[in-house]
Image (cartoon, rainbow, N blue to C red; front, side, top):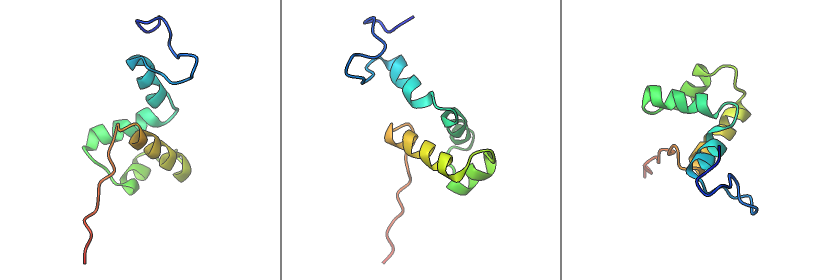
Length: 83
């Protein structure tokens, strides 16, 4: 079953269907588990995520966080500058 327009991914390679966009973001091996931890906690530090998902290497966790942040699924907290 495809998107309403009949094309899951157009020839230019950029998904436009909401279902395809969601699958592109969450279709990775570990992305759903990282997102699950955010949903359970409301927010989480890198250390908390790493402890909750011990099977993930630091590189994979960092990559998935960057992917989810880039897709605006999660937000990276901004630290207030002290000075």
